[in-house]
Length: 119
Image (cartoon, rainbow, N blue to C red; front, side, top):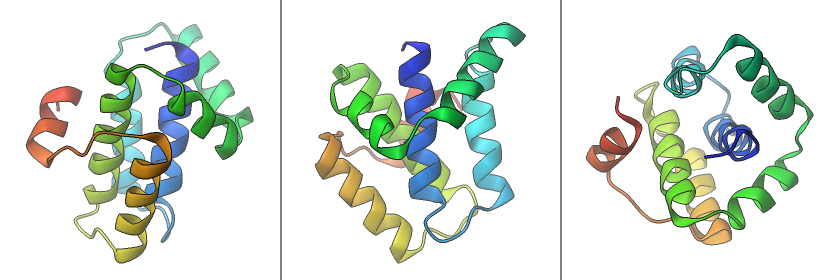
């Protein structure tokens, strides 16, 4: 996954998980995903900067054009983010379904999401 794709994945996961408000547990999952790449502080800062400057539309376009592996990881992170607070609301699941259709993301189960993310 490129830095741009990672920033886009974090952006979309944040948008989906935050549709009903953003819990600390959801934020923690996104931080955990970024940390799992074991990047240098400089690279982390570049990704965070790209994330902050990226519109949701740009993030959607980046993931929509990504390869299947990126889409699987994006789908896994979205699932993990929305259940992190142990309260997947209808708004979150609706936003997830929309992203699955819009981005042609694979539907994956929680256990597969864990395996993909290594959590």
